[in-house]
Length: 457
Image (cartoon, rainbow, N blue to C red):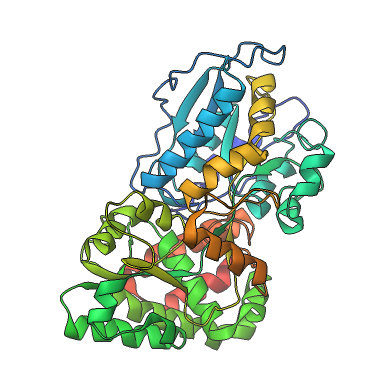
């Protein structure tokens, strides 16, 4: 989405103190968002923070931990399987704490495209929610830089929980040293989903596609020989194109060069960046005519219906397949790593945090404690289409697809962070790149996009 940190806003943010001794919000604004997903999530919302009220629960665990305050949760999980996964998480929490009243306050928008504005306004007004969904890693830094997140290293992260979490995920939860977030899932971004019968009818074997250029050849074949949309994609918001460019680049150049780019050396890889932009522009010739007005999940419905062949998306898309009737993994849909990225697990992670000046500290601590448990992650992830960040969650209920993803994670050579979902770069860079790819979606101007990427870093 376009950057929301105008100079006037920056001045206002600098003047406002949100918490005694916490300082001011950085002038770049709260972390810019590229879209899910996560994430992931439905696009097209106006970003209103109006809550739809309580989810109907009324209670606490009967312990002395709850002070009776309402637990307000802001998140962007409103699409299909995401919403179901979030509800499964709430159900488990309220079985554990039946007396905590939950105010479910969604801020829908693909991969968090609306939530930043909502949270920024709440923080500016000195009225943060109890907790909110955010990517760990670099997306947390505007908050940690200004002391706007509580250190939960002692209150939530006991020794058992620390030992159970994967090291890399644990690192993302403490970008400034203190543990400030509870990651709840691990998504894979470099997936190429496909409708089995559609690609078979076109004589295409996705397992044989050789690199990003080979995928373009497959799209050209589908366009020439079939009536289906070759590649489902949305351009209403920029995140889908940004994440597609990331994986084209990795598929062509490898993770080392990708790490060089996110480290800031753009000019040294100008030709490689331009090559990925050229290929992205070619891909965008084969997307739906209404790509500018649909959401990722609406487009995914076309793949389910057999009206589209391929979708590049995070594995939250599989959550939508799980809810579709007579659409079975292996028989009706399948996935391969994005061509050229075999051995890569391009990671996207969601987490919850504990804002300072918290309106319900005891309830928030209870929720974060629960989110880090085996029970919470066993309920949430199979429906969400993700794998757990804990190492001790049983995989019995995860199904064939996620079991294969889990095995791929275990066997992967590298798990690089993502630009499009806020873990790889600082929020001001992320926000600027959103603008670059929003413009690219309309113009397909490679020169302007390269200059924008160079300027962003």
